[in-house]
Amino acid sequence: MRLNRLWTYRRILLSRGFASAVRAAGQNVRYYEQNRPLPFGPYMAEFDITYRCNSRCLMCQRWRDPPGGELGLEEYRDLAETLREMGTHQISIAGGEPLMREDAFPIIHAFAEKGASVNLCTNGILLNRYPQAIAASKATCVTVSLDGATEETHDRIRGTLGTCARIEDGLRDLLQRPASQRPLLRVRMTFSRENTSEIRDFFNKWSGVADDVLLQPVHYGDGALYTSDDTSLFSLDPETISKQITGTPFQNEPSMRRLLHSLRQTGDFPRQECYACVLMARIDPWGSVYPCLAQHCTIGSIREQDFCDLWNSEAAHRERSRQLEHRTCTCWFNNTALIGHYGAWLQHPVRHLLSLLSPGNGK
Image (cartoon, rainbow, N blue to C red; front, side, top):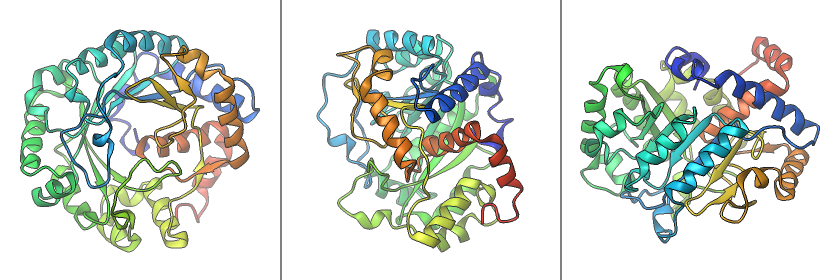
């Protein structure tokens, strides 16, 4: 949810529990800064409900993880109640490809009926199989990955010939429904060396069609969630990116300006204050809990300990103390970058207001 698209996301801003969740997030940040136990749960929890996938993406190897033993629907229902009690508002349902689970929609409903704002992240291949279920799912947003402006580029990156047209047909079918009768539909392009030159065409293709258009740079975070045998995929050219976004709304987004500045100055992603295990957490298909989307070091399993107890455990406290010492992270996923940005606002609102007014901001 971006500041320049607030009207688009009004159903989140006006949703039950949003204001109280923001207040709770602010308290978490203040307690974290004082190295005290947190009074509330994470603002956002991402659930990778399966690593089964019908894509074979160049920059992701999750589909190679062995299937089986995933958390069941009742376990997710228990988690939904626990997170409601802890004040968590934003839930992301991801994978793998979450729609490969037969109970994906009951899982979404389990969180939505507790008042959470649910975002379904999907590669879109199965959109045309479940149009009615998606429209009625009570998800707030559906984020569909499309990794290029052309079928050839998308299908090559995704390793699945013929799927781009199928995804676009499914999207357009859902977009024909009145906005009030479906979730917000967003398209997101993960850009790498393979498709940076198509950013502008991608934006022009979907702007005014989908409810929002997002860009996600592929990268190695400190936890290296993206993996590939071809590491040159992660080499991003700032001048090509700048040329592609000039004249689009991305040109004025603080996250993109910071990305370009950092790539030009250091060849790496920007470092920002991290709020892993403060405002966010990730739970994998088997119940292991991680401080954020990009980390691989677990703080425990919900199959061995209640999530609330894990959140308040010594392992979680050690992770927060470590972050207080190191302060920054290079993770640049859409969700974590935004949470880091807004977390810094919650921590130092006056300082960040002054930074916006500074003539050199964002250069």
